[in-house]
Image (cartoon, rainbow, N blue to C red; front, side):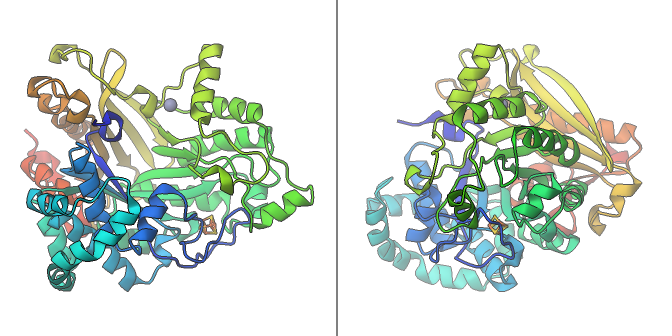
Length: 498
Ligand code: SF4
Ligand SMILES: [Zn+2]
């Protein structure tokens, strides 16, 4: 049976891992497995898949799309998540090959391909079978793949704008100190729309004690560069690092919310892993883990301090229990935190907790409310435009209006433009059981939000509005009179807005 939650946002997620490669960092908590990229463990689910497929981006994309479709999910909109440590540290040739492989996988996945693969009887979770079948189906596509890899990336991207499975978002991982205008420029050539950045702490003493190799100021600068160029900021935060305590972590989190202003957050409580320096410190009695109650109390505080324009994506990294040393964090920690919050009468107002999941009845268009939340950054103004229905979030848009200071961080094609950093409408798959008229996407919420953003930008005297469009969304914006400009941004002249 179809599990609605995976595509509750109407988007199918494809996660890939890059090949094993060193990282410029020396963080004392970070594990190393020779056959895995730095910080990844071979028994983590997505890691396992990539390992079995020899980190081949083409095969991983194609097979993931196949499995998702076979489970009844729509794969027309794919969000690609590239994990595997510091992306810009990989050689440029490898990065280009990897991104090409993803686009080839997306472009070749058609209903006909699906039928071909189905004939091979690839099973959903049977990895061994999946691997043994791989050479066979690899053979089917081998020649095509070889030819495709010779094509320029730009052409493969162009093909994706009309493909059956389109890339609506692409994220890579970076450290705050590797986020430069050069790496961001390159990221735009690849079509990256979101960066996952390991902030981990805003306290310089903690950052130093854990050998992170960057400072609080580096964190802030990185967030400016990302925001000023329209990237979505998915920031990671780690409580319980070496030398931290409850009070320091809470202060650091509040500072993180205020200064970094992340769009999405992954809270990763420190996990004690063998073969790390932190584990040695633990054995010597120099590092103490928080107990479950402390962790629940602390993350509850994090949740209630998180504004409604942020999505807390995770509060635990899905590390198999047998890897964890010392106290093992419960895999249902999110549930335990929510129970604790219920008992205290507390509510998390983040996007994940507010987004609509299951529709019980058809939506009456007239009952949808549109409103705007605003917050300031040192480099400009942020607008979070949202569409809600009975307190449930149906869709949102992130608009950023840069000030003069921001322009020093901006890439030339979008310098001085108002920026749409994200448009997200929760769509059809969650409404299954209801036909088109109740599907939120057909009410035109996205278009309405974009129109609102254009009016705000115009009111603030911006001549142009640009959007950091995923490669596969270019046709959508073209219909709204946005033109493709350099670095895969799309731009609209606001004076022309009727
Ligand atoms: S930067 Fe990330 S991958 Fe590199 S050592 Fe630190 S935690 Fe590990
Ligand atoms: Zn929440």
